[in-house]
Image (cartoon, rainbow, N blue to C red; front, side, top):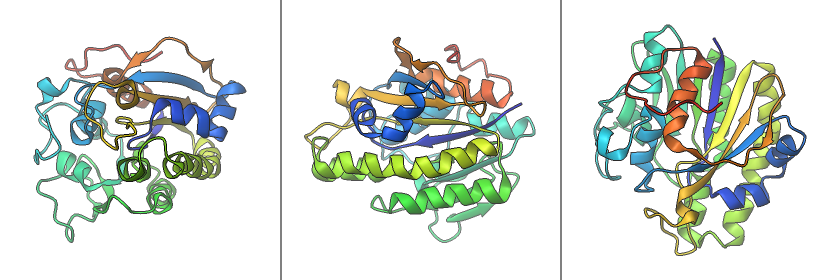
Length: 269
């Protein structure tokens, strides 16, 4: 059984990650990590894809079809599978994750900090402002890893999405935010590897220069996946594309928990 940490960089385009995230690309070049291009599901909207990433099913199957749909997940999901099989979970994430995997609607006082072993997300630190500094979200996630050493930890910064929807994907602000996130990861990934974590860095969707997302433009749909094993061994750049539906079963496999029958795509190998 392994420990897994997924960084979900909201709104991070595949090509901008490749061009701007020098530390992650160094790990790929030196074959300390594997890099995949992921084809995101449609629509390329955040809440539907949060659910897809953790259930491994399409939007029409899980039913969370748009960002304004406020309800709990109704499908077997990674958090639930981990807890049911004796693993511990945590998340430093946007409050929509609380609504999907703890309770809905979100109460900004009662639900901001959660430490409850009966919940799918047992240790949660949630935020409501899109413009929250990425450093604070990464720090909250790193603190959860240090304090509780959860078996599955989600760290979900919104800085790329905020920069993209404010300035567009071809802006200095968007590209520089990718560099800034990469610098934070250059500090944290070595620490997380020492703690025994396999680290995945991916995104829900990308963004285009019109400052929107939702459709099938490659800028919206192609996102990166960096897979950094605790062993420090990787495959470098993997040419074949993978699909977002493969992320959830991959997380289950890495955690050593059963893959639900609803997750029909094969894990990434």
